[in-house]
Amino acid sequence: AAGVIQSPRHLIKEKRETATLKCYPIPRHDTVYWYQQGPGQDPQFLISFYEKMQSDKGSIPDRFSAQQFSDYHSELNMSSLELGDSALYFCASSLRELNTEAFFGQGTRLTVV
Amino acid sequence: KQEVTQIPAALSVPEGENLVLNCSFTDSAIYNLQWFRQDPGKGLTSLLLIQSSQREQTSGRLNASLDKSSGRSTLYIAASQPGDSATYLCAVSPLPLNTGGFKTIFGAGTRLFVKA
Image (tube, rainbow over all chains, first blue to last red; front, top):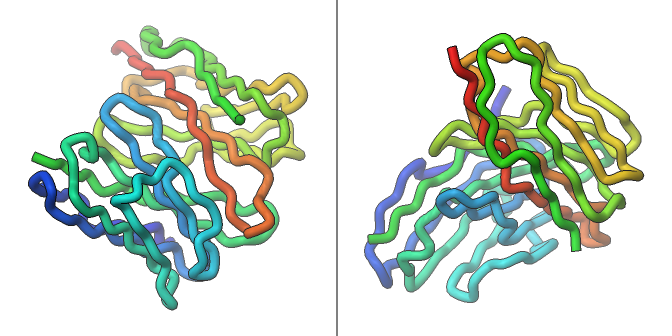
């Protein structure tokens, strides 16, 4: 069965650069969530989208923005990168109906040097 | 504000032992609860999902229970194996928002090491 696909799997950027992470949800899933997991930390919710509209917002820095496109894939844009942005970024998707669960991708490991 | 706590933070057991991981949450108004496994530097693997109306779920050697009223869940692992060594994360999803979105709130995890 198809899972949530994230790309790239690994990314190395320098401070003040920009990074774009992509997430391709499970087919037919209409909701996408982004999480950030710092070293030794539990995943923290950043932002979610339902039907291409932002549905909830967590602890996402103003330097970050995200959107969901017409094919339901989502991109997380991160500008003016800081060393503290180094983390594992997870995307999850779900189908908005009762009893759905969120399926997580394998994550993108971002290292800012 | 929903908070998820996992005890113990770390656990080391000999192979073959049965063990219990604990998870507690402060707000009983949840949509579902999931247990995940995470290997070092890797992604999240969903192990079990318990809907708010359910009391337990089983998959192979794993059994997860949910007591919503007391805000507790346990993950029982039978006959542990070295391959079970990983971090186990408990996560709850609050009731969906009117906008249709809901987010998963994670505990800090229990790091399990099963000795051969």
